[in-house]
Image 1 (cartoon, each protein chain N blue to C red):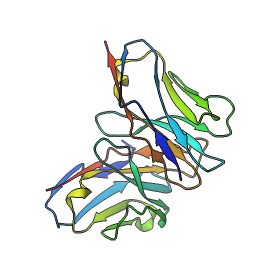
Image 2: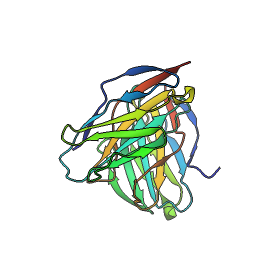
Image 3: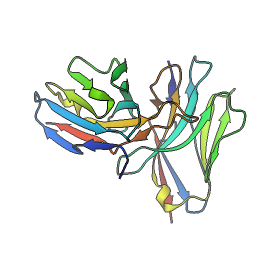
Image 4: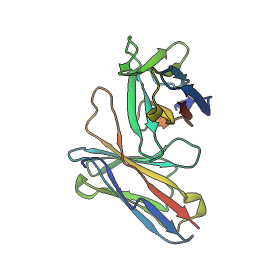
Length: 113
Length: 115
């Protein structure tokens, strides 16, 4: 079984600054994938970034990077140069030996001008 | 727009009624997923299809819930004898056979309110 813990219900950041959203996970699978999704108020889940458990390099996608610390079972999302459009819910998720993604409860990010 | 399409976007029904949601995945995506999201929570997996075969179901999918994907194209999720606890956003997602990232493409969801 997999579990995702996101301990920050809400985060605030000033425009153009960087912000880190925390995610810890628990799994008994040796091979797994970690995902971050963004959910704006429209409701659609938007894929941001993926990290495989065997990937040695931290994943990066534009302004998004995933700080993967396997021994600590953490997969924090770093957003650099925050923009007003980054205001949304952010969900961390894990996928192990089955097809399902297990999501955390999310973090609401607010970017202030 | 060639994204995942869900219909209806909103549904209000009375307890005890049946409701059906439809999902049209991205063309040529052979994998289709249903998730349920309640207020303040992340999405929870309900079921997964590969082509027309339903290969995985969550224990959340009680006997009142049924999903189909005839001919491996669109999918329907039916809830019979709705209860107030069924009120949620029902999200559909699709993808091709696993690529490097296994990214899922989600629709905008169908919001159900049971009165």
